[in-house]
Length: 179
Image (cartoon, rainbow, N blue to C red):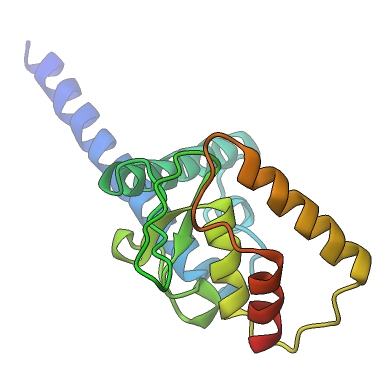
């Protein structure tokens, strides 16, 4: 009976160590520490530095991605599975279609993957936010692209679940050139 208790204890410690390993891999992924150590990916770090087999590295990498998805599910639950975009006039988008997780402070500008820096936006709200964060000079928009954008905006307006945060072609052009 004592051997069975010892096995249960070891199994519990193994589970605790695995959870801690996955959490540490998530932190390594978020901070890109693997790149600072000279590895191109988490998988390479696991295989080359930690001497995992390729199969074990793939399983741990998949577990890490799953843990990151759990974080995104928490963001969706917090925001009520709705877009959180608020237009300058105070109108909030209530779209529940084509939702994406967006960084409030962009990751490229030092933002983190923490839940407090994430929000849910629909694709139209997310794209207009991304245009505002664009830092490099914007290239000229071809006239055909503007016409296509106007047609697609018109189609969006006709749809039953129209998102009030969908910018017009003029607003997209103004936001594009303002950055």
